[in-house]
Length: 510
Image 1: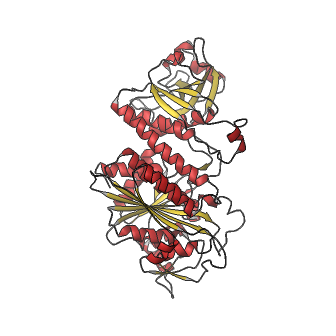
Image 2 (image 1 turned 135 degrees about the vertical axis):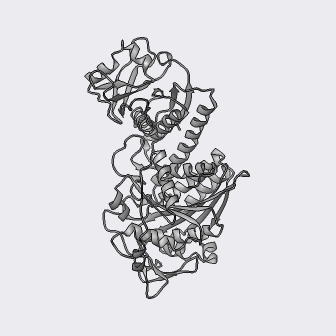
Image 3 (image 1 turned 60 degrees about the vertical axis):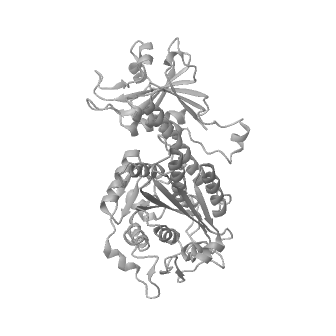
């Protein structure tokens, strides 16, 4: 795990493998080209004020995420200077925004895999900048190598950057210390969520996921309750049981309860935890199964957010519900045409067993509603339709309250997670009418992501504020790594949930 400290050392005298500096592009230079960002003054001075010119000669443009290496100047104990692009120079009287700093720090940390120590001399105007750089660097240093022999024997492959020294911050300042401590707590839990998403489904069964959650809960003083298959039958959780019926790995419902003696608000987070989704009897076509270990990313995000809230000691009660099941075809699997009696008492006609996430979420949402929290937020890799609508990097937000939906969108944008508010058109509800049951699990094909949201809304307790985050696009990155986002599991929605909990603790639920 990468270590991070605040340092007052001079860049020239710090023993490290590299000094990271920021560069930007814009009209602030005479040529309108490359600009050395604040924080790198000592490094630039050592190049006789010609660092930008040298980098331009090497082809650097200052574009976001661009990385350029060059030998360190004479007298520096670090052998390399690594310049990372920050994008455009800020307008007058403005500073680099937090997301630009996160992405730059992440790109630098990824590039420095295999190094023992690096000093980050990026722009730090205040504690918020320090937190953003720390967050980006720790997320960028992430690597999932548990199943690689080369990583175990140390002979091949590169280990993550081992140590980060953040320059320009104030180690004795309470605000700076708090910002960095927050970044460490949030990124460690987010990276744990990434680990879960990346773990192969033969190892991460519902039972195994529940064991991981239980161990972490006990470590951080979180109350945990695990309902096994017998308890689920006794409790009448027909949705979770129906989805897990075809698998030899039985389902679980995990409840994580973080409570604060100073809290007057209660949030419930509900996560879809399909540890592998074959589609069930409605089997997915070839080419659509390979990444379905990621279908538990919503539950991973909820788990990480609850643990982070506990580690940060937030003055808000947060309950996490992990609805865990494996969706497999077999002689015991739920069939298209079957009717399930849900925990709420409603009956659902299953028209497509690959629309399973909404079934496990419906049971968990109904159960969470019994505690009448101030708000429920569910998180799920729910629909391919949301990916068609918003792409691979943006998640959709639906809610039964416009102000709450707007608040979550603002929170997501604040922490650097692209999102977009989506409607719940009432006319689409009719498509889920069933002649056999109270509701069907499928409706109109067009607007499928919105139909799924309308289905979930049916199981929210009366008068409870609720939102649904469909993270199907950004939860798993099948492309190349960029910024602080790795290939594979991303930890999408963790930071949004944590920030929402923080705002709620501060009395701003939205």
